[in-house]
Length: 342
Ligand code: F6P
Image (cartoon, rainbow, N blue to C red; front, side, top):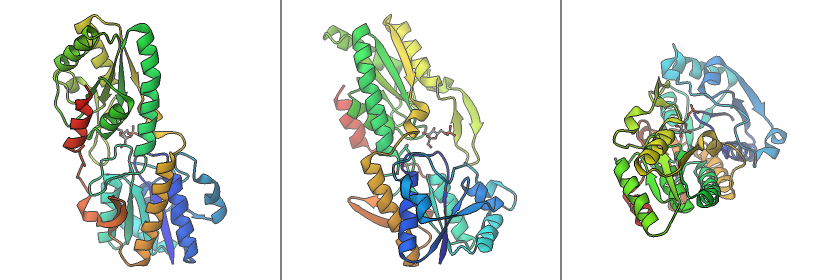
């Protein structure tokens, strides 16, 4: 057997840990593994390299992806799907492991329908892939946010400031809600709950009256805030139809508006790509390893057309056709718990 592996969409720190696990499991079965470069772009253009035990040995703790990534959508490239299938044939691939978010996984479904057996591994710091409780990269990103909020707290307290921290999450607010909750934010704006600037202003004033002379506000890049969210600069859409947002937009606008409304010294920080970089946490390394092993085992068991998913403590297969185009929003109980703290 010979399998291919690719990483698509925005990178996350444990991608290499997953690549290593896929390779090691495949090698245990006596299979060969080809790494396809630059996501689906490499599959369309026929660019791949054979992965060896030596190549994947030192990458467990290394962020990014040794295979590189792209947001290429095979369906948006002329004969893209067909060319992917042909490349796989030329390379002698029996199946492909696609590691990505709903776009990459949706494309994996299209390929599996077109005759290239594929399995998926969910990853995105946004943690918003349907049918799984976890997407690779989320835990590392959350820890970056918590570390940032703790640093912001000491400087905000020293200067009696309001500090606004913009985090990623254009469609779902997992990073804002869980990061804000774990980092002790005083207020959180997320895409799931349409909100008003007045609410945070009233809350900050209340905290001041109670004697708390600094505040930390977390804003998801895709938050819906009356009179503010709509002004975020949109830069068109990517090949999968996702809106491209200017990341520094909303945090800065919220900070300006808070300062204007309260007269309090307010600053903003945009965490942006810091959330996607660096070494993966222990949790991300372990789950990436489990997902990688399970993905290869799906191929071995003839269960292509599936993604591996976390349900409770178990890694289970889920049909790929249930993933495309669905955004897993933050569940109400998470939002309630976060809001109960402010
Ligand atoms: O999908 C993951 C993500 O990090 C989003 O949170 C963010 O909106 C987007 O990618 C940024 O994409 P790009 O890398 O294309 O700027």
